[in-house]
Length: 411
Length: 80
Image (cartoon, rainbow over all chains, first blue to last red; front, side, top):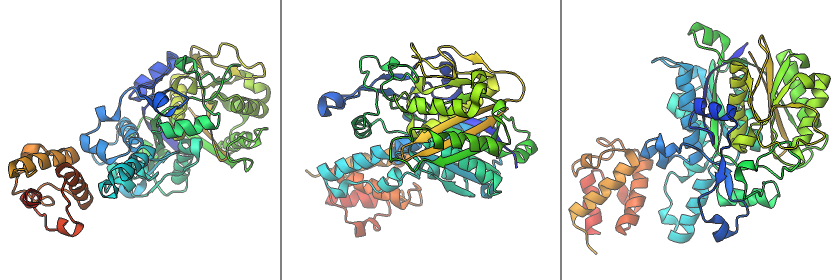
């Protein structure tokens, strides 16, 4: 059964919706800026910047919605509403028994959990609000999406760190292929720009410490890259069986052609140094799609701007694609958005679909001196045109725990 | 520090409005929390928790079921 993308939504460090986010991405703008708080002085948090939302959910949601949902769920709802409207479902919507939701978060309701602990410690257990558990549980975003759109075919939230959003889309594809649903609202969300996650990632030496140059900090493949930049936001896609989309005359952005998922089983946080699991995920995604490497014209890389991770992926892409890699335009959009963790694979799927639709591969910014080992055609600074005709694009996402997900879209 | 019933009503209306988006003017003494204001049990417990803090009173869990109308809650808090 063919699966198509009929709706897109996001709220991101580049914009409050898909149009503004995509426009900023093509313009090569950075969504990273200095945090306006006193965490550095107060707690000694060593990183003072992040990719932060342009439009706060409180600007578009009602007051009760912002009180009842953790920021991670608020962002998911904002993105889901845009995607739903974009898909053009009429008054009748979709048969609830044939509608699913799969919206993931890598970290979960960290703000809610830690604020509630502050309340217990400082003001006593009696002051803890009754909605604390439904707000902090990591399935809260998908549950709220299910509630809002009456998705009764199933609501899931696969958690796989920074691969979570991509895994949600892969599972959405499989949910439709298996016949469980005709339409799935799927994606990822993350709202973890909080001193605890920042301190924890910094303790792993995973984050860039370019406090004096926030916009230049996320620089995938550059020789001076020094770690990833935290980002926040959500991306949501409406996946639909081709038959269902055709029957209602829906506009189709792209086809979801395949997904490949593997696990490194190597280390809890470090990627397997040869990238075997990552490369295998890409290979499986193409096999499942019935494609060969020659069909691939674009890759949206996971590329988080870490010294080790970027090159493992790049070498894997070269290994898989061989000399065809010279004809594949590679984009690392985290250079502009920062790393949305559980939201990353979803936002980057939005980018991948937009790239296919508009035939433009978005730029990678901040690469002043590419890593000398890089053997791929990296799109730098300004967008580049993708070929006409039927082409395929891969979106990679990898997560702590050894999770590897490759999604293939075609148009 | 005893508050007048009007002061309690005004404060409670603010809490209810924050939680539900119902206009404070709609939160009047005769309104039932469930039937008129469409407040579910978890939202009611949230309102109770916030009211306890705002008015510095203790509303026992077993008492909450007796607070059917806004007036019931105002009377209880004002008398506490």
